[in-house]
Image (cartoon, rainbow, N blue to C red; front, top):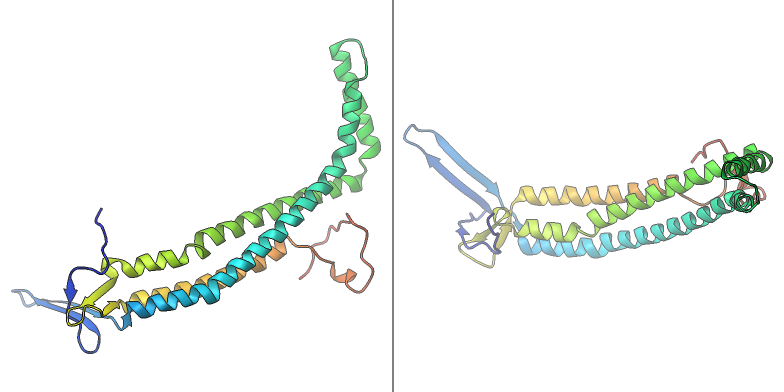
Length: 241
């Protein structure tokens, strides 16, 4: 593995129109050409990267952190609701376990009968549906939280360091032999950098927008003009955005 140095020790002849040009003709008359445009200065690229970090990445990171805070809050509340739904069944089973019945097999059988009977009496169809909805909502919120964290850590947080390293790679920059302070970058790399910036912004907005569909707190459209239903109500119909 070769180590990359910055700026590169090898100097290059850069034309007045900021091109790096190589030409070779072999004995058979075949031409081999390198013709690279290096209009972009390294210093300008770094300045643009710093500006992008301050004006775009930092605000996006704050929005991601706020969204993650809301999701964590909502997930915690949903988990409390899920616990309250099954609490009575758990209490009934605990009481049944201390009922003195001779014989381990009979005790197990009796506990099973007591539990099943209690479940049939207390677990109404709407309770089953409510419990499933809450569990599904928790799952969606947890998946959304993971997706937002991964994007923030893998893309937003690492964007600046990734492009700093790419700009400094020996194969991506050239030092002008007439002026060693004039360090140039490949135009193709700057184009890729611009595309990556645009993609990062669009992808971040998509992640935030998508998270609102998977895990959010709010009123159904029909409830916005009327009094909200009591806490814990459910709906089998998908909410139209």
